[in-house]
Length: 151
Image 1: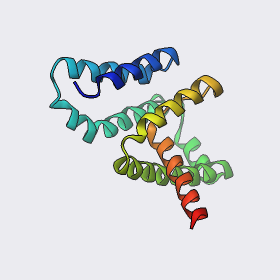
Image 2 (image 1 turned 180 degrees about the vertical axis):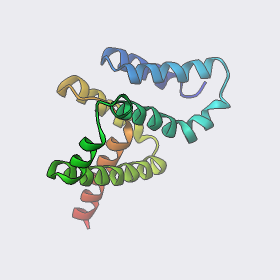
Image 3 (image 1 turned 90 degrees about the vertical axis):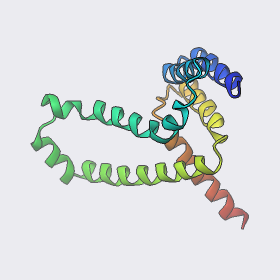
Image 4 (image 1 turned 90 degrees about the horizontal axis):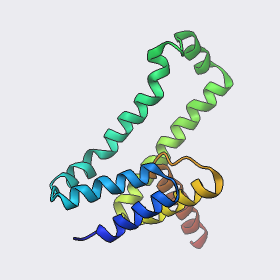
């Protein structure tokens, strides 16, 4: 079964690094492989990112749904300096994510390095792994800088 040894390695790394997201993801993919449900893999590859983003946005928007964040708070944050900087940051982050997605489409094998880097960030810096797109976006940015310097 192709990919199983790498998924097992990711599961072990996820457990050792205390990264539930990586460990659970590897477990789910191993279950799909062992249950011979491989037909699900193309669907996950195509729609998994969207599904993950839906859940991420749901968790971020809960304070609005519960009333912890009001319309007044939102208006202030859209017109204040921190709010304007947040808008710029959001625009830059989505652009970086797009570049990361392009990089992963060209070189999907880079995902293992991104995961190892994420684990390093978790263990050494107390980081939070929100997803490989921003990591890939930063990698794409650094590769563009290196290519610019080389030429």
